[in-house]
Amino acid sequence: EMAGAFVAVFLLAMFYEGLKIARESLLRKSQVSIRYNSMPVPGPNGTILMETHKTVGQQMLSFPHLLQTVLHIIQVVISYFLMLIFMTYNGYLCIAVAAGAGTGYFLFSWKKAVVVDITEHCH
Image (cartoon, rainbow, N blue to C red; front, side):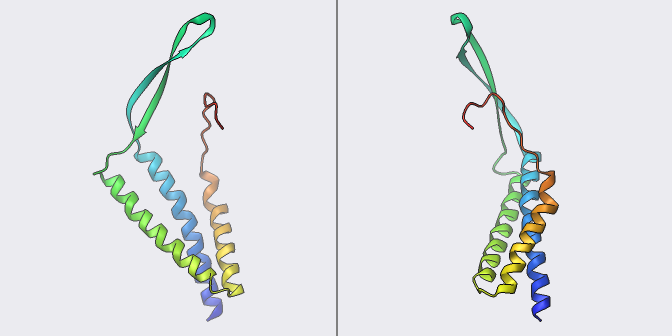
């Protein structure tokens, strides 16, 4: 029974990590461009330059937002289950949670792209 519990908790932790990455990917795909904002920026020799920023978002009453909401609920419930499993202080189950989360991160997060805005001054 302990071996079965170990495997189940390991897979649940892997699924949790995959769900986090899937939600991020779905969010990036569902974002739509709302508008471009231009703001004056001081340039060289006292000139004024216009800097443009794109604002993105999604509509509240849309299928992508509803899907994100349902997936968020599932993610929160799974995270609380994993926390409760870890708080049993059973060494094998604690190892299963940590190993599953690590394996899930290794398997799923390599596709996660980080976009760095070179015009951003506060890093």
